[in-house]
Length: 165
Image: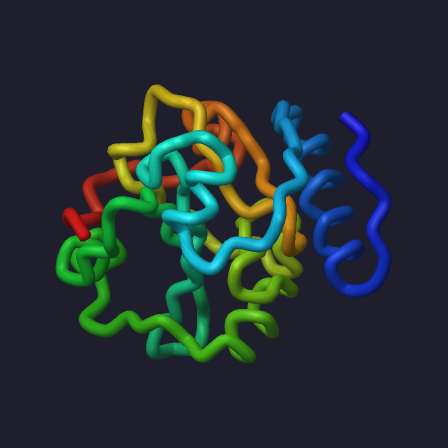
């Protein structure tokens, strides 16, 4: 599926996203949308519930490595559950500049697909069995994808890693 032509950093990120999805045989539908102030507004623009938008969060290990946590928009990371699953006693959300350096994506566009480094992916079990929306590597774009196909393509660990927001 060909996406829109973009320029600058966002164009590069969007291109990486599309190329990686294609290389993994993952069908994605890209939707252009106006900027949103928050996740709830983005859901309204897309005509879906906040639960159907999956946040791709970059999580930092104390050893300096990272992982992705895929969390539905109506939920939040459960730090105790994620730490137990990963087998560590400390994880944190890095500052925006560190997330950009780790993934090549700005906050609000982050996705494991096309990340400049292929970090491990942990997906909350509540995303399974449905079509979700996620960042597409550039501001003003959302991607729709089958969650089960996404987690399989990313070899994600699917587990209970969230709590209600």
